[in-house]
Length: 617
Ligand code: AGP
Image 1: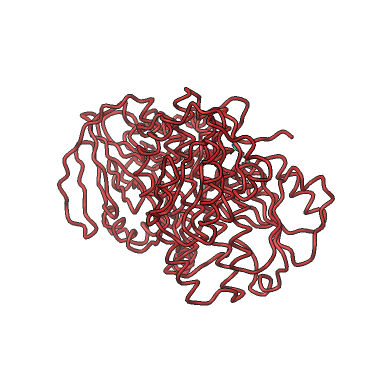
Image 2: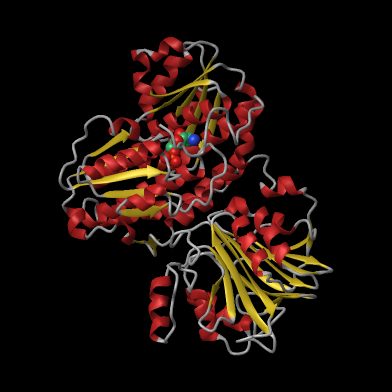
């Protein structure tokens, strides 16, 4: 999830691009760059006096801004990018824009190109040279390869060649004043003004220049000049599209119209989960080269050890259950802060996994160092490319949730769960521990999880109504069993973090061993009870707390007609396989915690006493 902005018109573009990028910084902030078609006495590749000048730097946008100021580059047509690294570390060389071999085509890209390795190979054979580790760099080279006097035609050919997701925007010094954009799946809007035309990943980037927008749809291309916008369908035919007007103020626009980043990030989960699957599940086939493990090594595994903190720990608990179920090898899960001090045993043929969205949590880092010193090989699962954990691990699996601004982890959690599912299935396939037909069934179900999350999100208003009626309670117990237990624990953590209400996430069967003493009319019990092997059990547990005057809110699956007799409130989620419910049940719980906290007027994006990455012990 990177940010793109582009402008062509009668104004100078450097400041427009840099200001636009700053408004998109929430989409990524590990490196930034601009490319401008500039007047130059020493032009090399463009028509008389024109060449593309690029400024890019690792780090925040103001570092690149300073450099652009020193170099004094400017012009009337340019593109800019703020990066959230997916392939290649956040270095200057990997930052966008990327150039073709002749230096006359510059490209920015937001997304993932799944077949970049084979494209690179093909292009190399034709003499193209690559300097970065990114997937994006194949794009300017493909454009160069296909260029025959029309950048638009080259782009239309290029998007047919690539597999993956994204938005691509390009300029060429051979066609000054022209910008070509293409959308595969990531957002792209056109802004229209009297002083010129814009492209951007999101409206806020250009809202100060125009209120008139056109949305570009999947597989469409667009050509901008200073006074013209032309949109083309996937066959290259011109489409007429009327602009619409936007009345947002800039502050709310950065959150995409949502009140808070947390809510926006909850709603981004279908995308984060889909992106995390991308390139690892292709046409029903699993691929996990990043793991760096041979089939032989996977077959010889005797145990898996996972360490993590907070929400990531809950993702690890889900991983434990699915891996043990599908792969049939024991999985031990530890809090990082405990593991490092408990004199751990590192056995042969034990795979060590560390889950951390930020990649900077000091406890997890210290646990990794401890395990490494005892001979363990580390696989990191993180959302941040180039983070310390990523650098110190032997291999890294990135979740592609995009940057998470809210302190409370939401979309990174579901992306972590997706990685756990994918690894479990990959190992099961390699070891033959799940039959082919069963594997096929699970994969088919996994592929439609993003759609199911989308359907749950449509019920947000219903969850809000339940929160409006229950937020004054003082004790919340989240109960679950088996696959529902990590969701229960995560639900309690979410509520505590952002509402400051006491909450417990507990195995429903353990209630009678103590916590049931807490239950009275001030208690809300959230029962995570989708269809499955423990449904009847948890239904009995719910009745036990109901008898003690608790208010019951049950999260159930679509076909359940039974629970509503016992619960005060129900919320239905789509049916799926028992192992996969965890990634669905957490969505209404995140929304419920969010709306309770909003009723209590809490700052959900920056809750008291908490930080996004915990870099102190
Ligand atoms: C989650 O909402 C919390 N902010 C917190 O528990 C977090 O999950 C924990 O600090 C671990 O962070 P990490 O995933 O970045 O390592």
